[in-house]
Length: 456
Image (cartoon, rainbow, N blue to C red; front, side, top):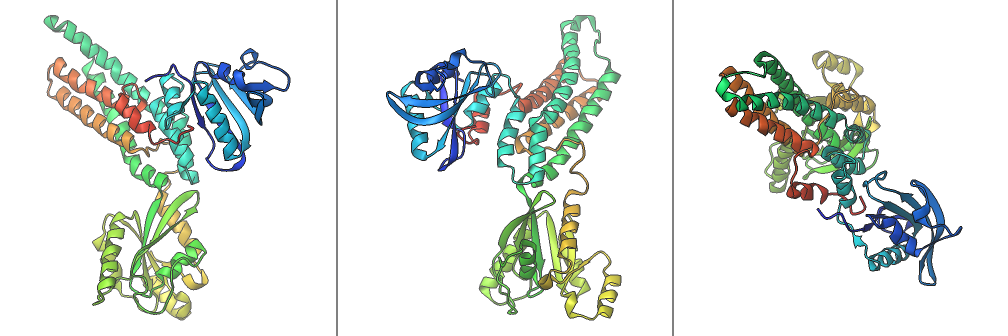
């Protein structure tokens, strides 16, 4: 991991804007910028304090490329832990490229994706899970995904993993010590205390692993399939939820022959709604394909909104959807209540007490549906103090660590020798260390940081 050179990249989004920020990091970052920066007060950047901003011009010989603000961050008190300079210039793509090319000619190198954050990790400014949270924070598009990323970046998840690893490491040291005195047949690690610790670690790992199901959908959006017979109002409901004419609405059965997807944010959580083809028996080849896709979408969805027409309710149909997908959260919606008598509605409400009654065309009851979806999706888990795992790499490492802890527990019960038990303990420590970067490889780091944007 070469860190002796100076790297440069555009830190703001590419394209034309009011301003652009160009970031340079490396041992010579300040002196390199000093070469081309002409302060309006004739200051040298190398003589200035860290975390100061200076006005002046970037000069290419006698030619002024732009009037800029230069921010100076001296090592180790910077994002990367190195000397960092950020040049705020006007957002012309021509100006951006002229300044970048000027410093490349001076010896700077274009940064690789995520290289600034990689250097922050390598210089101990953050651990690996916090570094990954930086990318999640940049990509967050809802309050929920933002909250998860912020908690991870603040180190809540890291702190929990480090505490587990430290406690396990203390006992592992005692187990290893026993190996050095194997001839004396002594025990330094209290087996009862060790058993209690393993149980505690197992419970914590299980809780973190179980949180991934919630964290993953909150991060990527909760897929919701809207299903039902043709002409029950699925497309009308989608349009009402999105507040726009997204799907074609027609009284002709089988209008929707393919799934239509769009997303909205409810209560800070992204929901990805999928309007599917109506479920019925048909001889139409194209419609059959659409119905087949409907059931595929239901399999992919976390929530299923099953819609029925208040004028044509079949109790068997409602039961069959819930029976066919027992592991899905199914919300029954009875639509078109505005087209039946009040007496009929009251009768239906008494028979289907767990259903929601709406009139999608007039938007009646749509707000109650949104509330129900939100409650069904999070079930009170968001906003608690529990750490939520949303990264699949972390999930895999936690699962492997739990597997090794289970092996240690079984070995402890079977009273196997310390040297065999030590192998499983080392593996558990290894997988926990993978999460925070206490244990890492160049391939792992390359894979993680390649998903970052260039200027971060």
